[in-house]
Image (cartoon, rainbow, N blue to C red):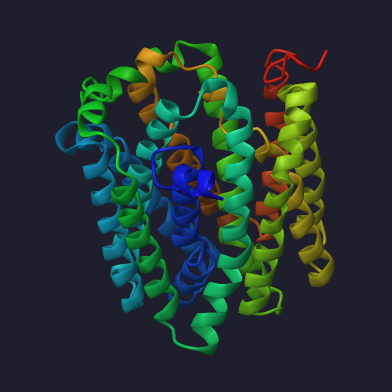
Length: 398
């Protein structure tokens, strides 16, 4: 017990797991509330897609400025800015007006990008490379707690207690994250030394990043994973409302589906034992089948809801390796710059989903969103075949 407490009081793997969990909780309690708020204000799924497309475009541009922010104020300063952006965002969300919502989404995306990039850099500095295949599944399991509890908790608080309460809770998690990071501390000299070359134009790293096939492949696979989860969290609640199941049913679908993240430790172990390539292929194919069937069975809402939950469990297989394909491919001297480029997979996934589906929904019903997402996962299964056969496999397993 004393050893664990000691680890939690300094920059270490357990401490970073706590920080990632707090970041997850800050976002998870709003993940279902926000699309339903947008749907109530705009009244159509296609209009919600346009709103998320606009906000995601600005959010992507803002996230590319994070390296400049890191150079100007250091990692800790960037995390402070990120947490403050999240705090301002929840204030804008609580206003619940159409003018405030897009500004809040942009601030939320920028704040999340700043926190994620800096935490990933801290992990690369403080967690041995050989331990990353264990750290990532543990991170995903703890994230599963947030993603399982958060979606329903946010909706339940808004519907049964007070509409502003989920936003207050999200802001509280952001401030706790900030306080805990400052508590464990990272020596400022090391912080500045590691990032001395980070803050130049991040666009200069883009060409070098995509010139490396392993980094490009890691980014594409992560974009697909991020895009699927964004699709799930935006359109599953709308599915519940459109089919008559109700808002709270949307929270239930997303919460139970997110419980699949508790399986990532098992999938991470399977990846270490047999290699990541086969694991990702299985995950993408299983997600293809279940997501497509969910779209085809919208006429039977409860069957469709069950298939959406099953598709989330299938998508959790893809989360088993986490970001290991990138973390094991990046060169140590390029960590800061390459991490800023790689981290755009989140915003790119957020951007791609509403960009594609705002057009799809002009012509087709909501079911087309799930069918198209299933087809995309099949393409990514093909991409996964380009990973080395033994990639991510522990040496002790023959």
